[in-house]
Amino acid sequence: MSQELQAKINERNDQIEMLKAQLNHKSIDKKETKRITKEIANLEKMNKKAAFWGGVSTKLETGGAQLQQTGKSMQKAGLHTTAAVWTPVIYAGYRVAKSVKGKSPESDLVSLVKECEQAHAEGKITEEQMKEYIIDFTNNYYRK
Image (cartoon, rainbow, N blue to C red):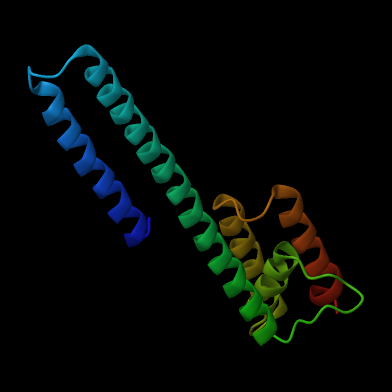
């Protein structure tokens, strides 16, 4: 939540405390009591809405920053949209396959399987995608 939003919520909380103090005085009539109670309820409702939407905006900003970071790393890798569209899932497969190429084809295959199992365990790829990456690797690199 932003500092500005938090300041507004704190200001409303101060107003609520002031109104509750007025409500505790015995010298006010029923009409005034009803008005103060309504105003307190309205301020509390505004605080709840502000907190909810503030949380939503924070999550959206975080998600946007992560997407921007993914885009930057895809651009750094030289991935530009040509005939194929590079989605984050395809990019993840590309990065896994690229990172495992090492000393021998056998060690590359073992490394790929380990990386795919780890990504599947973390929920980054599905089991179907994991199989697809391994089959693609064996058909296009391992058997050559």
